[in-house]
Image 1 (cartoon, rainbow, N blue to C red):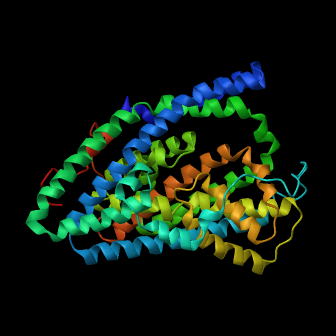
Image 2: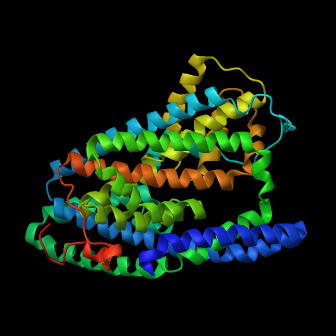
Image 3: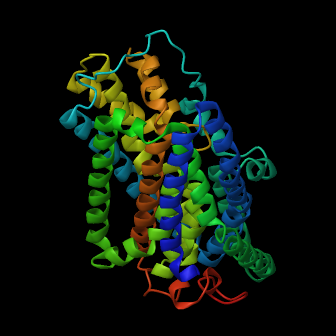
Length: 429
């Protein structure tokens, strides 16, 4: 079954669209909403299962990886290379969104009634200041960070703990072995949870279509079409950039991440794809110590799809209200988004919150967000899938930079599991 999981998830997504559209067509709006609520419960439970395993999975694999790296200078070097790629990719994503929205101009001559300028969106933007973000980096308690799934805070703690364990030498081996055993256990749990992925995909898609219908896509066809075209261009740019370092292996990486990409797309959640992405990267040949270090950081610093959406949607709203922004103003907006978007991790409806904060700073009516909030689920599907691609390529490139990228490892297709990608307990890495 695992060998054909991509096809099963794709079939579940198509079935979800069909069932959701039937509910939307044959039931009245109130009944469809109630029915969709019950269906979405399945997807919600799956996402809760995913969130249940992410914190211990990140903690255990990252501590093991850093403990095996051992040398603190190596950790610093990997961190520096990771941040160079993340900053470059983020700037490129924001710039591409800016370019595409100016070329396509989806908000010009919008044949839709605009929301009143004073209408409220209900989004809180106070949590996106640079001060708040820097303060938020360090956890007050690792227990609290794990309970709330604050990935960046877990990464910070894991780095300190991993370096400490490595510095203990032989005395730290028992601790490293314990975390290694915990990582194997969490990977086994991950395998169990992933068996429910097709059912969750069906439920997530069916519930969305049942309440929104497919007609809303036609209403926003120009905006959605332009955004997804921009995402495809971004995918191409990411793969071209990756190929400069990975060569023709970039195509194999694309094949390996099909399942996590589909999972992220259909559930509109990058988190849902995290365990499977980690598995496929290690199958691709990225050492566990690098994959478990770079990938969690990517979920906070390298959300390429979400980044591009920030500039694309902000200027779409400005176009819709007939507000012309000079090139200098747009560049200033891009630089501000470069900073504020780094606070997206852990913020509910993060992209919309970042956009709302940006609109306020440039005198664009925040009410314009109401134009796109109804279709945000469909847009989030593309953003989440793009984030998976961006983080997968980033992790692989960092491994290549370090000279640690190995030949492809036996994986699910050959009947093995992610546990095979981890070193045996007590083994040297």
